[in-house]
Length: 358
Image 1 (cartoon, rainbow, N blue to C red):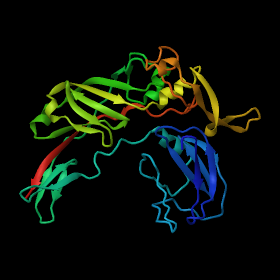
Image 2: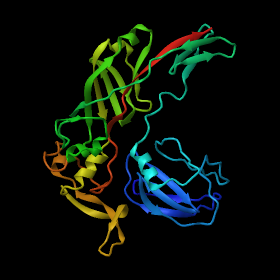
Image 3: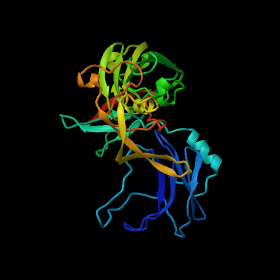
């Protein structure tokens, strides 16, 4: 979760002792490494030792897929993740730090080297994503050659939606989460950020009967895509990818990506500003913990409004200044970890070829 991680050793559905619990803020793409050294578990988060746990005395194996439990309960990770890597030795702290520093790998181009479908005349059509020789079960084959993917490197101009507590625009030397930016208004920005730049399309790709795709990599959370002013729609789930063949020409092309994120980061930023209204603690809803005077963790309760402001009751816009957002409840604390935000990339041009086997 966003407030920590724990390690369990599952022997059966009813025997799952926690051998390690680590309380700390976690957000966005994070690297986890669990090391067992002579039966002692140590958890590393983003390349740093978070905590060493308890030795249970069991023989522990790396987790795989969970079989259906007798009580009908199975466990799945809710979120996005890269494939599990298991090393049959104890990695050093420096090795783990180096792996974490590399960041997550780029999303795979395709789950399969080719998308296969049956055509109306009974043939087999393929959209080929990788160069190679493809053979059907009846022995017919075709060889497809494709250019290598092109990563779009360099700076981006980013215009930020006005009225959201951020500057009108920024320049990013390279793509990274807006939540990592030095400017607090950008870090806490919620709304639509429009990323613009030129991309160079090779003339050869347009002459070879290829399809050209723009792959946005990782996006938080969705993006409208325009190429040379032509609206190519909105991508809202993986793969964040659109066919740009009919919108581009050889040479320089203008790219505009309107990326919209969630409200959480702005609400976290607003939590550090003075309350605008009358609020009281809600004793029934805990939203976090903080150290008390004695150093022990004490609960932080959500706060609820006791009277709605006049501008709200009249249906007017919120007055400018102070907080950007208004809620009758407090959902976040100041200083909570921010969500990944904006265009994370890498942005790439991918090339495919459509072929038919008969």
